[in-house]
Amino acid sequence: MSATAAAPTTDWTALADLPLRVDGYALEALHRRVTEDYTRLTTVVHLRGEGTDGVGEDTTYAPPDQHGFRAAGAVLPLAGAWTLRSFSAHLDGLDLFPTGPTYAGFRPFRRWAFESAALDLALRQCGLSLAAALGRAARPLTFVHSPAPGTPVTEVRARLARYPGLRLKVAPSADWDDATVVALAATGAVVVVDLKGQYPEGTPVRLAPDADLYRRVLRAFPDAWIEDPGVDERTAPVLRDHWGRITWDAPIGSVADIAARSPRPRMLNMKPSRFGTVRAVLEAYAHCAGEGIGLYGGGQVELGPGRAQAQLLAALYHPDAPNDLAPSTYNDRTLPPGLPSSPLPAPAPRPGFG
Picture (cartoon, rainbow, N blue to C red):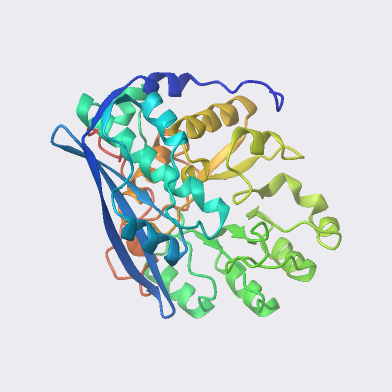
């Protein structure tokens, strides 16, 4: 498929004309202390109509954007009788950020909160599960665990000792030396390495491209997917022989973004919130299926319904991939005993979206 060809929209066609009635909406603030110096804030959007709630989660990272969203309250004109298609078109004309955003890339995150809430509400009002509406069957979901960047190797080993079947997606830090890399490689558990080199400069999670670090990683993890390397004149020669296992996350928010990747990737990290709309997400699934591009799901430290929704999409479209969608309790600083293991049971086909 060429970059200019229309993406197949079969699954969107199945959903686009679902009716929904919106009487109003409300916002629910969530927070969780994830590390000693980081408290995650998200906001749940409750779309309400005909005595039913549809929910979605705004995963915008910047606290000022979350505070501004909540302080403004439910001021958007959303009430009315819609279809998913017409509701999405209505959102096109609204500014969902009363202040901000801190970073333009956060706009689709909030849009996804409203779109996923609308999808949830429409399905509930119609008495349909997402699987039934799409004519798909969810399957057990394979997941990996992402320790927070900077988690000591000793702690990673302790988690693996408690959960010996766990597989990992790891994010290097600038101080990763040979000993750290060798110790992590020795666990045999690392299946994805996220180099975080595609975020804009100044983004807190960005890791500057480092040719020496990339050499260590590529040598130590010869079978792992390598996500989001920063490509410059120093790192490009290091990466040249490994393009077959390079995968992308931060730059991918549309079919056009996928088609523009050269060489064509074999695998991508699929975060629905980066695409913003239900239609864009389903077009991306169709495009990747047509191009033979594999997908694995990615999380955003969701605290509410966003995690279950991302898990459901992964269970429908790429259940056997290394989905970075472990249950949210895996984000806790200390992993308690008794957490679910991978794969998670297939989600039950209840009315709604996740």
